[in-house]
Every structure is written in structure tokens, then in C-alpha cells.
Amino acid sequence: SFTIINVSKLNNLKPDSTVNLDSLVKLGVVTSPKNPLKVLGNGDLKVKLIVQAAAFTSKARTKIEAAGGACEILD
Image (cartoon, rainbow, N blue to C red; front, top):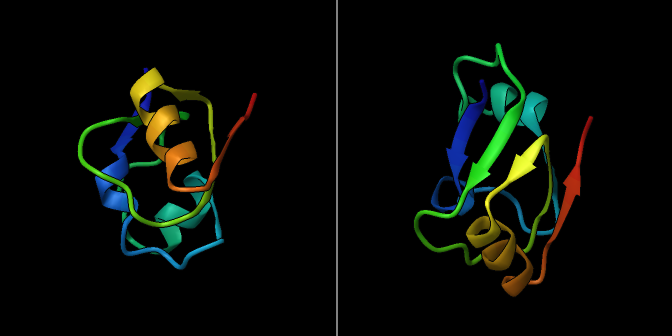
């Protein structure tokens, strides 16, 4: 069971920032942080981010990297 978010929800974040479950909760993007974060690939991403999550779909990984960002798997 995961807390999920789509890449499209990350567009309003500061470029070159590191994004993880804790930061998304602090920003109010995620409201139920009970489970590890999984990033899904719905929508477009236009911001370069370092995204830290427990899991990524292949589409999400492709979009994050295409925007110049990076994906980091957290245990």
C-alpha cells in the first residue's frame, strides 16, 4: 500500500529542489502520509526535481528524467 502522487502535481514546486514524502506533506500536496510514497506518470512535468520515493512507475521515471531531474529510491 502506497501514498500516491502524479508527476503533474509536482509542477508548482521550486526547480532543483529535493522532493520526498515529508516535503510534500509540509507543502500540503499530500494529506495522508501513512504509507511510503509512489510516483505515478499521469500528466506532464516541466520542473527539474530530485524526487525521493519508495517506488516510481516507468512513465514517472521517464518524465522526471526528461525534465532534467532524478529519481532516488528510498527504503
